[in-house]
Amino acid sequence: MDLVVGRVAKSHGVRGEVVVDVRTDDPDARFASGTRLRARLPRGGGEQNFTVTAARHHAGRLLLSLDEVSDRTVADTLRGALFLIDSSDVDSGDDPDEFYEHELEGAPVTTVDGAAVGVLTSVLHMPGGDVLAVRTPDDREVLVPFVREIVPTVSAAGIVIDPPDGLIDAEA
Image (cartoon, rainbow, N blue to C red; front, side, top):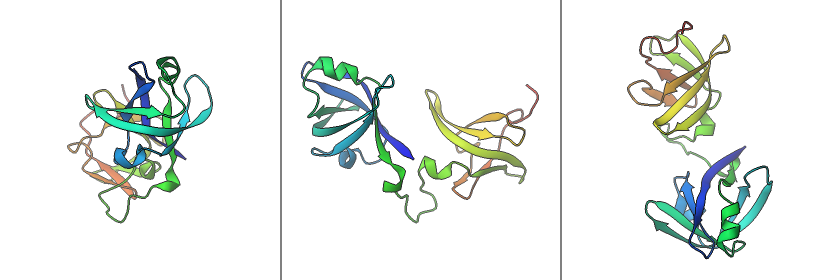
């Protein structure tokens, strides 16, 4: 399974730098100079490998120079490209309070009362915050805001939610 560690937001300047939205907890290691990056290109462009020649922080984002990108025109074609790693290359360790999203997929979701809600299918990163997508036994998708007040317990073994009235009811 592939994990996204960054997404090219746009080009920057005329020398071919790209602005990257970082999606990893260790950007200094993942985007260090000399690192080879595997990218899924936008618009069905397949995959391509890139070599980081320089990385710097600018205005809350990461700017990358890539050996294979020499000017703004080439950098513009990478807008939307996803930098990927294989999930087998990461491990959340032994701390039960630390996890990667892919480790939660398939976990059972129950209420604080013990009632089964369904199975976690994914964690969605929305503009207003993260949301858990839960598939119910009757094949509905329930979106649960991923905030401590509603999701007090999270582990790969199971997720416990305390939903407000109407969040998981079948009637809409």
